[in-house]
Amino acid sequence: MRKLALLFVLPVLVAGCANVGLRELRSNSKGPDEFGIQPVATLQAPASYTELPTPTPGGTNRTDRSAVSEGTKAFGGNLGDPNGPIPARDGALVQHASRLGVNPDIRGTLAQTDADFRRRKARFTQYRIIPVDRYNQAYRRQALDAAAEQNRWRRAGARTPSAPPAN
Image 1: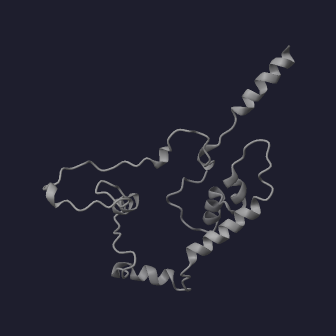
Image 2: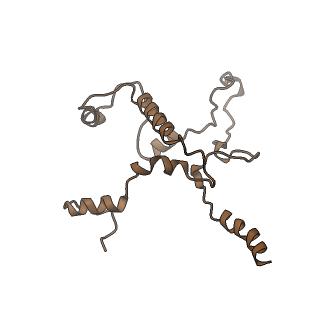
Image 3: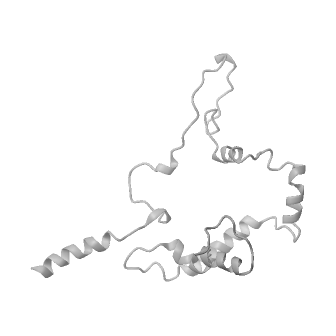
């Protein structure tokens, strides 16, 4: 009788240990996607209903919010024209960052390199008895150990004022 009870209780206990977190991006739910819901700005009555712009189906709305522009504004930045000239205040930064050359297709190159890396790492990872964190599995060797890096910098004599004090 105890073995039979253990046979039913043990899988329940092991199932409780699963911690998928936000890295498992697949959903079996039929409900709405919580991350797809966007808050909108408050509606306002226009000064004149006759002077409203013509609607643009599929276009932007006056009440649509932009996370990029709101974040940029919150951090004191200015979006401006992304294809426009570089502001004078950022000239030295851009010059220093591009001193070794600039790859105009860096995003495409990185996306292709990352896709190839994940494809190589995922050859035999789809055969698992229990679910695993695929992200950590693929990028385990590229992860930075923050404590070890902090100790390395401290041993080199660098100051780390924002880090917790060494024990």
